[in-house]
Image (cartoon, rainbow, N blue to C red; front, side, top):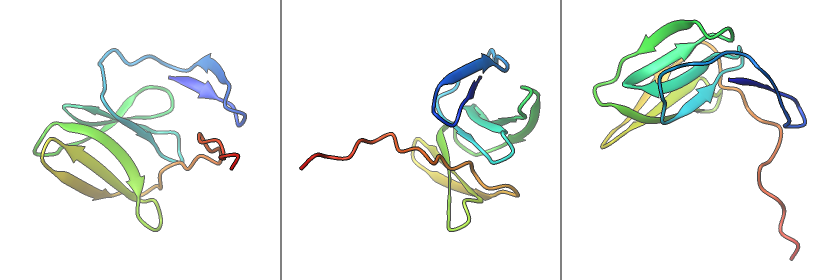
Length: 101
């Protein structure tokens, strides 16, 4: 995991997680949510702080809802939602460029 500046440039390495992951999300506290068999939650120092268990192996995660405090978890044939204490981090930068029509 690397620091990311407001301009979008990659900074220093913060920590490494040895297990692979298919999907990920970040909350406003900097906690990282990874889909690794269940949803594993790591704090900004790379320490595992929580495991969110789901019936099927998760494929991806994202925050949503009107307050961004709902963690949506997709799996092979299901969609799960979990109410969280902290909202997901929202990027102020758009990854899409405006069309010049």
